Image (cartoon, rainbow, N blue to C red; front, side, top):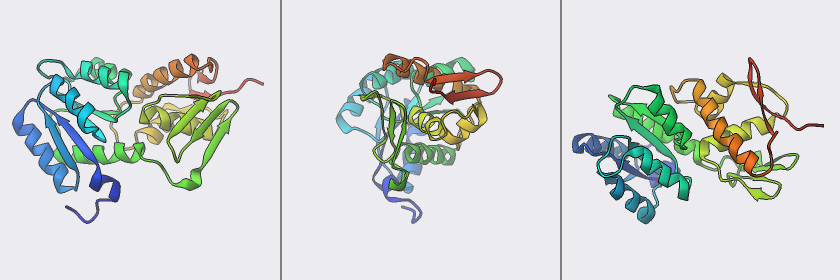
Length: 235
């Protein structure tokens, strides 16, 4: 265990879902050396059973799995909860990455990868998912209320079920309502350590827009042509 690992990372449980034993063992070894607890699943069905039983703090999820592929596992995770998920993929097609993000993945890593890079991404996603300092308190924009300490967002009193990345994006927009943020600015705010393309922001905001619309905020998130996005309350 390294001395630099903070309290959250020391106690965090990471589920490694990987059907190649050698890769799984290497990932677990690096994670444990950094103070994480780990569990391992080698197929999609086993992964879901462990997710419901062990309640991991984060899931490293390979897309190519026996029994049930990683995208279906991700779909089922998101239908029942908001556990942070990082996709591991040997595919290089952007479609696979974007599909995973549209389903609610928080980040993706393309094989072959450095185990150290994976650990760094795990730490980054956990930091984004953790409650921030209490002095950020509560942000209110019209009917929207964001409690950064509790990582909770409500619209018109109705709780919004957001992924950690969606929450960070909404919080960033809400702290300066009316400002037009570029995709680069939003990417830096929500996925600062990721090498994801700027258009990945579009996927996350597409999902966020759907959730806002379902809660009655149809015009709350506005696309600013040629720039990016802003949170906008009509006068």
